[in-house]
Amino acid sequence: TVETTAILYVDGVSVSFDGFRALNGLSLFIEPGEMRAIIGPNGAGKTTMMDVVTGKTKPDTGTVLFGGRHDLSRMDEASIADLGIGRKFQRPTVFEMHTVWDNLVLAVKQRRGVFTTLFARLTGAERDRLDEILAITRLTELRDRSAGTLSHGQKQWLEIGMLLAQEPALLLVDEPVAGMTDAETEQTAELLRDINRTRSVVVVEHDMSFVRALGVRVTVLHEGSVLAEGSLDAVSANERVVEVYLGR
Ligand code: ADP
Image (cartoon, rainbow, N blue to C red; front, side, top):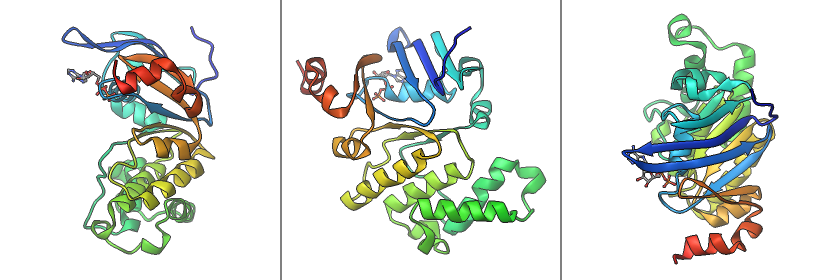
């Protein structure tokens, strides 16, 4: 057994596709309450890492633990989501015909289990929580708009809100600011910092000015394992990181 305080413990994980090693002994430890940015060139293994954590891909070797005791390598995707791991994919997938508010309500009902509660009203506490989520995601004024009329950035925030409605302890976010305006990008950094006050967050991102705005510890992946870890300034000054980003 492993003794760890980490909310997410990934140790020595390898994954091969047809003999190609997408992850090669990856070790990564996220502490409770931490927000971590994961960067790295295309093909570094960032998506495969997220797939392993969410159960979409099974590791060939290595250990993946949530909260120090749940062995994610033995669980299916639905059970992992139920444990409290939420994943935001790159493209927003909101219900465009429904209002912002109804999208959030649907997310709550999804969490409760569809069949018993589809027609049940939300409790007062649930409504209060959704009001908080609207505020966090900068959507309070837009609650009665249909989601299809939102900007790309606002749709991304709504989808993050829908994940928050499921109250994950760990939120995984894949390139949230791709396609956003500069103003939306800045607000997304603030929004993630707000979310990080109450839960752990892992952000995969290419946009370095956004990573700088997050101001968190950075892990650089390369060829399926960790090349460097530390502040953005520290990893940017690392010779091996510079080589990987500039090409040899
Ligand atoms: P990143 O997200 O950092 O760009 P990925 O995790 O998507 O990297 O991919 C790592 C490597 O694994 C890439 O070379 C990719 O081509 C390969 N790969 C990823 N998924 C598969 C798959 N399902 N089948 C075959 N190769 C894959």
